[in-house]
Amino acid sequence: MRGQYVLLRAFRNKPIVRRIWDADDDTVYICNEENFARLSAGLAGHWPVAFPRSDAFAHDALPAELVKRGQPVPNEVWEDLPPWVPAEAPEEQQNLTLHLVK
Image (tube, rainbow, N blue to C red):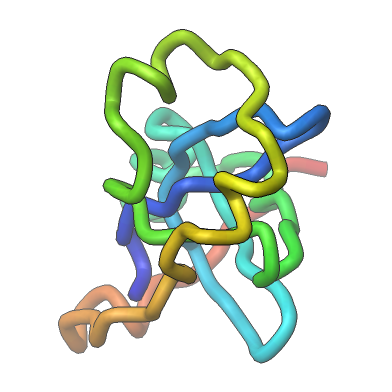
């Protein structure tokens, strides 16, 4: 799961793709590439951002060009997208320590 790409419904229905740091039953915690690399290396980084699981979808559910443009996507399109499903992470990724910037 950690490191998986996820498509997110962001503010005003704009699509963004980020990396999963962690997740629970209701929430996914996401990072951009730079912060994910820092945290994965055990360096200080920013706290991952929480998104509702209901706004997390399979990362390739929308065409890449549509995601790059960052234009709002109608609600009816979001409703038909497959939800994000966690994948098993390799053991070494499951044991990473999170270092936060204060």
